[in-house]
Image 1 (cartoon, one colour):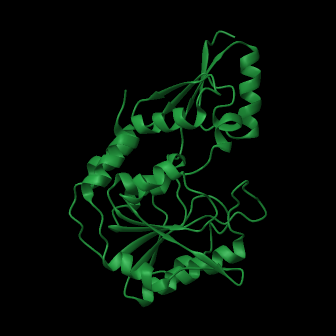
Image 2 (spheres, rainbow, N blue to C red):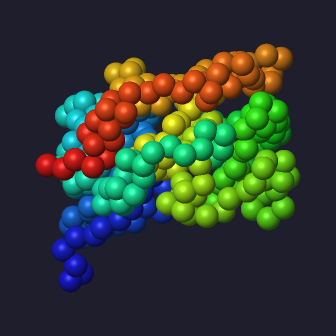
Length: 274
């Protein structure tokens, strides 16, 4: 009861919602920090009011445009003060990698989605494990058959943390923290956007993001994202998720992104502060 406020991380869980409700009854101020960093590019409006901003007095986010995004989607529905302070962690990644010359255009760091068993993630559910496994296996085989060395970045969460056939199918497997894994390749493939995607973006890597059609983009911000990364849509055929293999390979072989546009996006969304 001597505390005047509580500082927490991600709030979109039963435990955090319960704890926040109890603390508010004690008239404590709750300050919560943003996590991940990719939601500003997606239509995740459901997540905020009853998730991360539930019972939150102050919400600390990354850059100025992240704050603008939250203010736009929330309008005046939430009585939460939003502060943009920039991210020292992403600034460290930016300073270390962004202005390096690309050295190797045949190595791809593949940052895959996780295997989650019977857990469902609503409203935009992840692919079920058997489909996800075949999807990842096919991506690795396609890229390696076209002369690329794929580094399979094992997801730190979910199943298959021990024996993982996909890591053996790839040229190599990485379990390093992202700030170390980013040393291994100048090109990055993501079939989902999460914290590792944002770390790769701040590092100035050549990123191809596959839209698996599970999670709609924020229409307003997608155009900005597309100025910094290459986005390619997958498609469904006979209940199997597929990709235009020739187009995927061509994106890596002829990667063309304006570095100034990427630099602006990184600074606006992740490094700037009020």
